[in-house]
Length: 463
Image (spheres, rainbow, N blue to C red):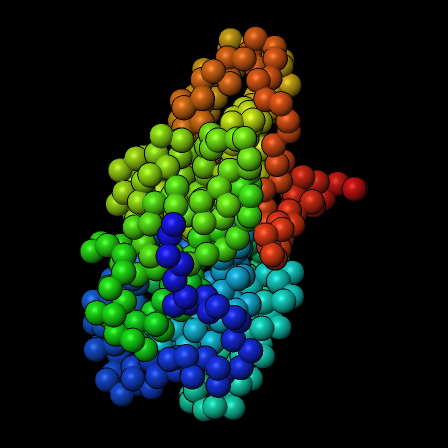
């Protein structure tokens, strides 16, 4: 049985700043300001925390690159715009421990020299917004902000709102359309020369001229982990986990399990143990496939004993993702799963890159035809061809996700595909057609019923 951790997710949600401080929080910010930005970044680097939003990039390296970048104005942004299918851990964190997120954001802003910081969430996250706004009031009253202004920015439901380049567009009041350049090169309210998008006007009080405004964007869990390091030390952080993947990780487990949940476990815990901690498969069933969101290759049943580290997950050809796992048991049809997840990426594609929008659309159409028993021998070669070109000229990772995930399903479950091409489905039930989580409370998942009505132009059909 896996031992659950409570570094970030307390046994009971923090209802006040005093409760957070009494449990060991709050000193990290004061400590960082006492030792200075350079020494703080050194401590974060020693801790070895890596981005928990999916990319796994070392936080210390990212902070140092922005801190050392040229530019008179810099920003720090906490990305809480969670939208990955099967994931709820960021919202669970912001509900139970918003103070760690804010402390981490303030530490990062101090390190990169930002006087303005943003905490970005979807406007639909009403419970989380209430939690972080309440915490901000308390933090400000306690004198934590000093000369930093923290702004809560809300945005739309679109999946791409969580992509860091699109997130900056939303903060500036635009649609979530990814830019070309990453935030550390072209940040918030930048007036430097552009590459195909409209430049922002200089912010009030700033003199004209080309400014790139290097911006630090971190997932909210990454920032909370960084606050824990500054409160307890890099050595303490490394007491759990592995050398290259230290600390704990927040995991969401949903789908065909007895008790869906968000749990915190040491890095290096096996996927099987994490699934078991959430009740395991439904009685009489076995795990057939697990998806870490829609960003990585499918994890098959023979790899359930893989440790949840960046290195071990990469070694089996998949990825850790954002710690959100959708479990499908042996009653699920993988053709249905493939068409469902492909459609999600198709409708969420922004359309700026034609190979992505057209490619994901055609792949989805073919998969749905195979699912409905109308496939032909020409369909699989056509999917293969589309997958080769779908990511051409991509501004973001979405079409790479399509190629990686869909090709892995077709490779690992050829018997399901063959059955559908022969005109019948081997499954005894429908799979979840919209695996985007709206809420997760007491083991009960509320799925986004609107997702199945979403059109590729981001409008919705009538229910």
